[in-house]
Length: 201
Image (cartoon, rainbow, N blue to C red; front, side, top):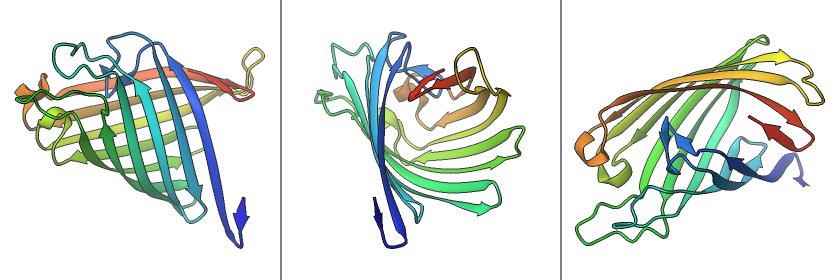
C-alpha cells in the first residue's frame, strides 16, 4: 500500500531446510528445520522483520530450547549505481530456553553492517557482525564474511534462472571455552532456482 510518495511493503515466507546452519554450525542437530518470517519495508530504506526457526542444541538436560526468534530493525540504501549498503540490529531470542540457575543465557544482540555490488555477471558482498556478548554469554565476538553470486542459466528445466553462490567467513569469539569451539573459518556454496513463489536451494 502507499501513502503519498512513501511506499510501504509487507511480505513473508516459509522455509523447510534439511539442516539449519548459522555461520557453518548446525542449529538443528543436523536435522530438518522449519522457518518463517515477516518483513516490513519502507521506501526510505528502513525495514524490520521477525524470523523464527525450530532448533535442536541437544541441551535437554539444561536449557531444553526448541525455537529461535530473531528480531531485526535496519536501514539499507543504494549508495551508488548497483551498490547497496546497510546496517541492522538483531536480537536473537530463545523464548522457551529454561536457563538453569548457574547457566548462561542464550539470548544475545548483534550489530551487522553490509555492502554489496552487482557487476551484472556477478554480484559480490561483504558483511561485518559484532556482538558485545555473544551466544551463551561468551563475550565479545566478531564475524567477517564475503560472498559472491553468479547467474548461471536463464532457465533450468521448467524453473527460472539458475544461480550459483558462495560465502567465506571467519568467526572470532572472546570466550572460546564458554562458547564451546575455537575461533573458526566457515563457508558454503550452492545453487538455487525459482519457480512461481517457490525457491529450491
